[in-house]
Length: 163
Image 1 (cartoon, rainbow, N blue to C red):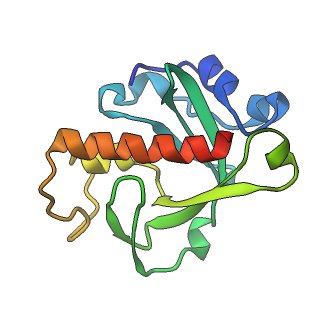
Image 2 (cartoon, one colour):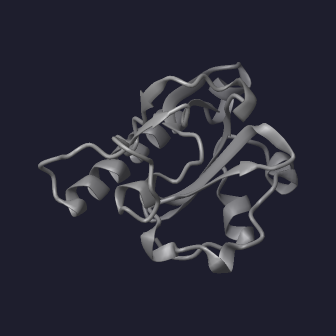
């Protein structure tokens, strides 16, 4: 994924107003992020632990989602699998809920997926971040196929949010 600027990220949100996108917390260390290893940039809001965000390129242009999730203190310490990258965590997977885009979202409709609580899926898939013992299951898929699966799962989630 190519590096995104703060302005590109703010303009890319598909499921919140321009005012909300302007006020949300964007990471200040964008230049230091490992962009070559990212299929999407995900982050939690340090001022609002129940909010998370992700930004990626989708259909050739930046797309970003505002997500709601339980605060870290409310996460249960059970073993769960992320539906994006298929990484298993104990207490490290959260239900991330995105309001649907447009009128459907204004009416309260949303879409959810169980995702790595730290939104570091691309780094877990590539082995750049350790999920602990048993976190990455042995697979017959190549690394490139695992990356493609993660990208496809994310694209399907974004498609559900935008339709």
